[in-house]
Length: 630
View 1: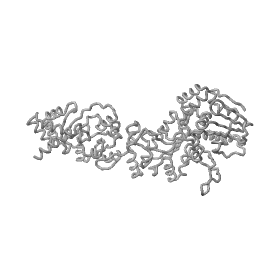
View 2 (view 1 turned 90 degrees about the vertical axis):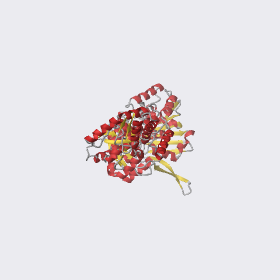
View 3 (view 1 turned 120 degrees about the vertical axis):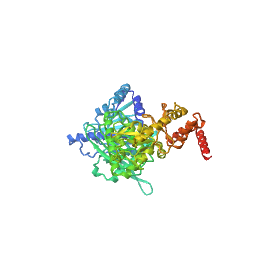
View 4 (view 1 turned 180 degrees about the vertical axis):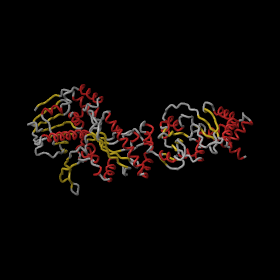
């Protein structure tokens, strides 16, 4: 028996590993199974050049056993095993470095994506001390005449003695501490294997209790508790739609079938396999409204689950996408929990994002009914991509739908443009509001209805943000009908002259209206004969912020610069005519000022705004109504 004092301050090292790096204790089993799978891979490779290497033990497997009486959890493999030198080298990786040196390695690993510390066996192995107060490891290599046993409590020392193990491979015995006795339960072990190591590519066997009809344990049966071939590694031709849907429901906790699945195998500078799902219905277990919640597909590296939710692989506006991604090209640092930021990950993210958009396009064209359900449930989240993305915003905009004024249903922007082909209109007209009812009551729609010109109704909360960043689609400018001057009807020379004369006639009246309401509030007051029978409306200056965006910015506590609006009055409206007449009769009339103030207040309400003093407005309404009834 040979005892060794750890050269490093191992207590501090283990403190770093078990508390600072590994935030989730249950991954210890993933680490040990991964080590066993690596050892089996090495044995398999060795056997390719040495046909006698495996002997009679050529069926690779990992065995897990539980001994509740002794508080033992045992993981055994028939991999390559370790010689005495390899045992000291591998298990002693941490021990041979001082704490400060090891910490420095961790820092470098974060900075250098090529530094793959997880490949050093000792790091993952030491995660066992998160749940065990003692660990024994027995190993036998065909390249060593003797077998060896390593024993330690992970604190001050370890010992290496000769073992009686005769077969090739490694056995790790964990003496589970009092706080983690749950790990000795059969159901818990199976749960962890299924969660983290279900697809390691090697059969994982466990002695499962067998019971009679009364529930009494009658014995045990060695049973495989993992899948050796994952669905995403199979050929598409091998998999039926039912199998795809079943896997989706199992992994996403969604009871409904997905809209579609996207199964892909990419080989090249960056290689990966992916199986992603676009949902159709909302999942009661997933709150997609919160962009800060965990999201993203499961990430496997070399068949081992690394991340349950890998948001690094998809943008936040695709947080409703679920599935799996597997690659061997992502380098890891000391813990499999923390992926390094690297270009490989970025390339995979770009590839997956484009694949998802492509899948949406196909569903849009071939499965309209279900795609409409998808948009109803996830369209608002998808639209976030139009705001956040640069290069992809046009592609994203092409797979969402917006309400059409003329068609009365949701349509794509391409459908809008197709319907405009017969006209010379090159713009995509839109209006922003907080609800469909609100925008449909806008006076600005009057001339569009009259000329049968379509308008996109932006009524989702995110739409107010979109129009600030999304100004053009396939060469067609997006134009707000509440900003700038839009004249759809051709005017005769006579009509133009009449309009100019009306403007001259109203000039002083409009100036007084502006001063009465406040030149600090209004940029100007002007006439607009295209407001139907409405009294007036508020227009946003060209390049100004739309009112809905302004409200949202204020609600988020952001400073919003004061923006003067433009009040437009309809010279054909009865009340405007009365106001004009009152102006001519008595420019200082209180009645005139009240009517001007009323016109402004009504315009605010008409666009969904709020008045500072609603009571005063109601008094004005009652007063006007009383005068009318007289």
